[in-house]
Image (cartoon, rainbow, N blue to C red; front, side):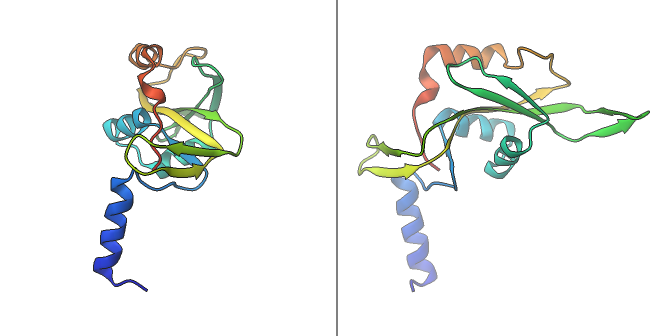
Length: 149
């Protein structure tokens, strides 16, 4: 059993190699960046995926967008909220994903690949919940680079 200092050293080495996998969810670099930008934790994103209030077809090929309100209030018997948390993801077959861009190969398997996550102020209209900024980044193709955390 390694002591605390050795444990920290090994954890830093894993992070330098590209991180470690969390369960059955794999995050893209874009998703990590957006989660940091909007103050979303990996656990919050996983919760939105597991228990969505609304589910729509994503704009990117073979993607699903799910939403969960930030916090729900009840007024006169109706639910209302001030913001929504959206997650766009792909379901992938159980397979090995290898990332070679950061030194040694890192392999992980996952069922869900999170493409993006964001907060939407207010209540989004049904049918097109994804902001233009996210759509533009998807079209450029820069968000599909894999980063396993």
